[in-house]
Amino acid sequence: MEITLCLIVKNEEQKLSACLESFRGVFQKLIIVDTGSTDGTIEIAQQFGAEVFHFEWKNNFSDARNFALSKVKTAWTMMADADDTLESKVQLLNELKNIPDGSIGVFLPYLYSNVRNGRGTMAFLPRIWKTNLRLTYVLPVHEYLNIPREILQSFVRINVPVLHHKTDAEFSKSFVRNVQILEDAYAHGDHHPRILFYLGHDNFYAGHLQESLKWFQKFLRLKTKHPHEAYKVWMLIAKIHTKNGDLAVAIKAYQKAIKMCPDFPEPHIFLGDLALTKGKFEKAVEYYNDALRCKPPKTHIFLNTHLDYAYAERKLHEALRALEPKKT
Image (cartoon, rainbow, N blue to C red):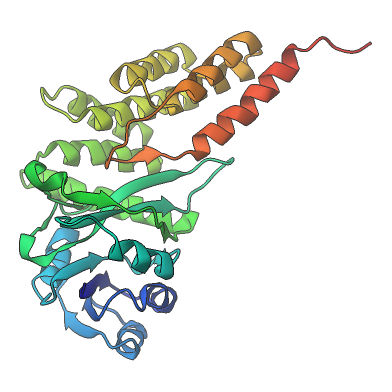
């Protein structure tokens, strides 16, 4: 299996070496598309044997990724970001040797570094695929690989995590940048449902809560929307109303999220947290138990990780202790 690893980069000298070292041995060819570095990024890439291409930045991540894909000549393509590291190259290489015949692509777990209070976020993302599929990325930001539904079943999962390293400050900066890109795309006529979704999502994380609500309302008025995205919208609407102190409205939004994806634990956990803070311990126990009974479907769409269950278990015991008779 001959693999070309592709990255798009700009001023990544602080992170690029760790990234490429973690993937070294998995890829045979390395393509780096630079969009305007002024530091030592290109020199580091060349030290790893990269073929470096320059690409004029056009406020569109898909354009840059697709340019990189156009340069691949090996049978297999792999995509990563400069702030990614592979947890175990040895394990991945062993797993790749044993993928079923007829497999045409691989989803890897993508773990974000914004873990808080014992909880985190994970997405299974397509990271390796056969080059002759001629797959391309879509959307100017929050880009995703456009895989036809009829071939999706020929992709396999390998549970070797890719770790995405970003500080809180870097996340905040990226959300502000993303909003600008998305607003520009929308103004130029791109009204794709995910443009609306991410305008709400990224405004939320940029701290623009009212603007976030405006875009979420536009998204919810769409006749056709992905249920997992609608679920996430209701979750964030609930968080906005919680921040604003509108707890009754927040609870209704969490309940809407449960209707969209009843097997996801996160809304049950947040309802438990609200009940716990209000001293409604029996209700909190009920919600945390509901969360622990959830069995999310195996899906390639984003999910909060198993860390949610550890959090729910811990909070359940906290609520149960609160219900114990006090010793005199």
